[in-house]
Length: 340
Length: 278
Image (cartoon, rainbow over all chains, first blue to last red; front, side, top):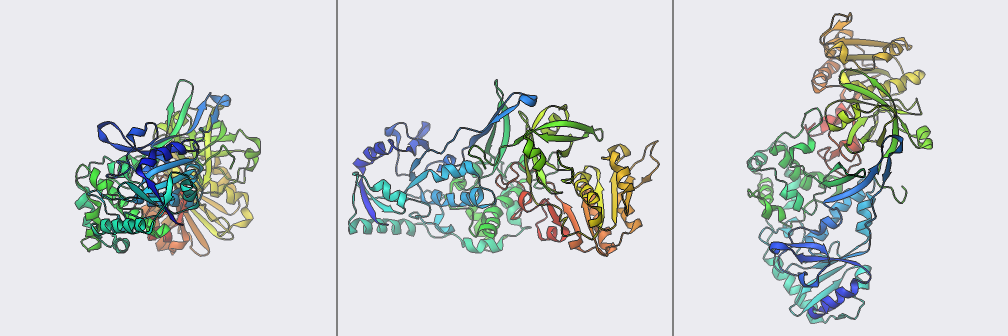
């Protein structure tokens, strides 16, 4: 759908202009240098570029904690109210291709699997995603092994590629076209497109595929030593799931307040023992071995069977965050190699 | 769905009757606050719902009432956790939240004209009771009905107040047994699978519908097989921990099958296709 360029000196004026019509979410520096996607408050802390942020923008579609309803009163006077709407038009800046691809996986669950989750759907519909091609993949990154690319465009409205003093801006949707129809953007020359492509190719060349993910689905076995071999040292901390851009499991809990109470959903993970433990005590997944098997099989086998695409986009956050170095890339390579 | 509604918004219902089934199990009758919903809440035997005690949380219960008896719904709860304990503390007049009905159901249309063999254990009778009363209310649609029901002790049998109705229904037999009797129990003592073997119901034109503790299921299935029931003729309903009930929260899957969407009712033939994780 065409292309444009955006001078780096024009980025903040453009963003300021966006704020008139949109909520803007951008990667911002927090304490200790952590970068997270936050609603824009201070221009100074916006970071485009560098390593991918600690968390994906998932939390803007599936918040870590989200009120589902409030209640007050008792008996026949009990009243329940839905939460305030959170569907204002939002532009998310600096979205990495792996994280944008991940949203299609969340869509499968929240919009595609039987009934529609309107809370998720409203935020999804209201979001415009401005991508940023990865120039500096992190050490855990493996997007090219799972069908992605550091310059992938799936799910994005625009894709920015850093060309020094300006960005090459690939326009990928009508929503994206409307965003670049502003004075901040200039026309892209053929040379800009060529430079962007050159950069993409160079980054891809540094990320050879580590395994054949398509082949993994057919090789995932129920009883296999690979599960115990890796799960034996798992601490059940859940960091892999909480940082994962496609993990979507949640819990629903009530909290009592002075006025009544609130029911909320919050992220949960199949890595916790409580996750599947039933009221009377039976747990179909009693140890970390069954829980690792669930997490890996879900992403690379069950979702493939259900939706025809795997539930992993190779962002590598689980690899880097695991305190005991459980590396899903090794698990997958062993499965693919028949090491079971 | 209304503008303010979403998948997780419950409907309010008032508890209007509480029956003490056993020392740890109660059956709650709930009436929807919304009058049209009260009369037109449509469900099938075997479906489940999420019931909430506001301030404590939600839990999953099968509907134990039959849709042939409209105006209210019933569910039975054994005291095992926070929500069930809070439910047990509720008196008539209190309000709960109901989401549902969810899941698939016993194939009451497909099994029309067939002989029915119910095999229930303990609180596992809850979903079977819904189908049983449904079939008894449409008695002409079904063949002979055998009901095997067992519990650990006489005091652990639920729905005892309906036993006479079941016994007296036309062409219907009720076989009760307990693992351990007491001074007042004059009935049979022994486990359910052995009783089924002794009576030996014919698989001819029949389906078996079973629900109970894993140990009962484990020993009942081989007995049914020996009697000649095929895996397709055996229907059961699974219990899994659930939160959303609508295929989003991600905890009731067995392989790529979601018990809340594809179940909870499965034939034994279907269960054999799933990974052994339930």
